[in-house]
Image 1 (cartoon, rainbow over the protein chains, first blue to last red):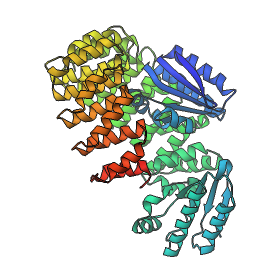
Image 2 (image 1 turned 60 degrees about the horizontal axis):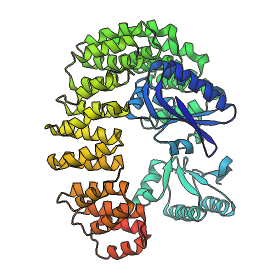
Image 3 (image 1 turned 180 degrees about the vertical axis):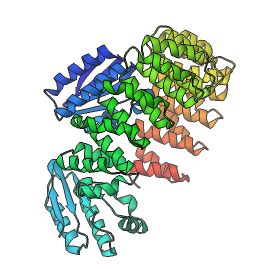
Image 4 (image 1 turned 60 degrees about the vertical axis):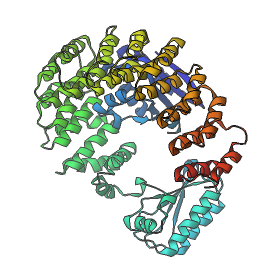
Length: 107
Length: 472
């Protein structure tokens, strides 16, 4: 579902396969735990094949939590189709979206 | 007097007064000179409407000093008069120019919001720095009759996640301004305001397509099991824009109902753009039959549809369909073969795929040949002998692509081929060869490139070499 790597002190979460209600919830809970120990988490969408509105809602909820706790949630490596999904809902203007991991890490 | 504010993380903001004097720039230089570890210097010119030439000389001096100190210099909030002065002096390319909204009073930001180029950035800035001052400011925006300011207020509430102001956003659903209604609909979706969904449905019939699109997006974001059925009716609309929106919304909802509706619609839809979108939409369903549907779409008449089907097959990693895709590599329709090869290059890592591509190479059109060379590079298995011979092909696009793929497969052979290609009669091939030499860095490559520079006449190739050997 996802893998986590520590890249120079920042957690990068590599999403894999499907982002739906179940995987989205697990992702949200895991990242909330990470935020207890770190200020920034990067979500890489490179391995995302499927995503639906239920999964997207969990990621929005995660953003709300991160904002509330003054944490940084950054997204990167989205395919054109996934980016289109964010743009359709206007969420491309809400999330910090970077073209690739290295730029997301720089912030 | 220049106002110098060192901030955290090695950044300093130096604000130059409206009527600058030489000492203001000297103060800045002294500060930079005496500082250690400055990462970034922001020279704020917000209040400076014009710069005399003597001050331009001071700017150059600060630029030189910042380079010497390894600090990044950014001129911020540059006014038109100063910008023109830098342009006339041919200095514009030597300075980084940016905006720093922190220098502006809240009431000054209103004017910047009116600039379409700055509107998004100002909203972002206020949302990121949202406090009571900005809360009062957007309360004023909401009371105004200016649609730009009201929309900005709504977007700031949304982006700053100010849930306590959600009632203000809901009121905007009755605004006479379409842009305000659109913004309010989107923000209510971000906020997860499910109780507003019923009200938002009416906007699907809006004469303003942006409003209808926002409504469809928010409904799909807030969707439950009933919403696919409600949105389905818009697939029947004579307005193709509404059909497009319905496809996007159903794809995002992504339940069994929406899948069934989209499949049915695929059987009816004639519009090329919408069939292209359907290919993408259906690929978002994790169903076993989806790769087969996409495979059949590779043979549609439209190139756009084929491209969407091929890229969707790649995105969903349809490796179980690789044998079927390989059969299309030799299709008599050039574009079917082309997109099949593209998909093979992205999906396959096996020798079998390499063998099929190499075997078909002599039989296919030039465009497909180039795609095959690219695919072989992407697959990455060693077929360097085959590609090496293509570096001398009569077609320059083939020569260039062969160099590129060789570089992905066999470094030594790529360097050898790249040196040979420095004598190619076409400059883009020489340029590619130099890129490869730069990447592979074979022994004494800089000396060899310097020698080659003596005879090279093409400007772009010369500049590329000069940048590598440090002569630019």
